[in-house]
Length: 123
Figure 1 (cartoon, rainbow, N blue to C red):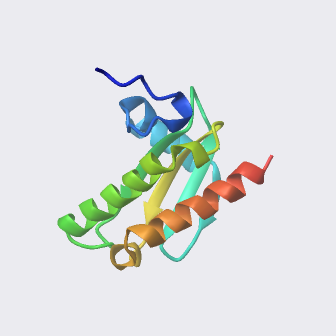
Figure 2: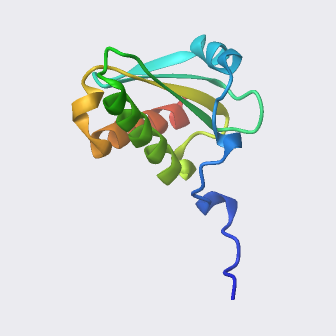
């Protein structure tokens, strides 16, 4: 027997429609409001379509390619697991700083959730 589909609020998939994919989308968001911690900079702008959509940027300053890819996976997973917490009206980009490489998944998730709470309260 096939289980029934999950309601949208509990849908934990990371679909292409949840991602910022084109350079033009990233550049549009870059002009938005910023929030920063010592591990991340998060930039958010009003969603162009059905939101929220998420993008990740990790520069070579963070580490070698396996480290950068690990940080990207952690950030995407944090978004995927906590989709219901993100403000629906925003697209956002997480820009990893150097300390993100050694922070671990839980610390990055905590930073993202703290931002989500702040952004949800803002007009």
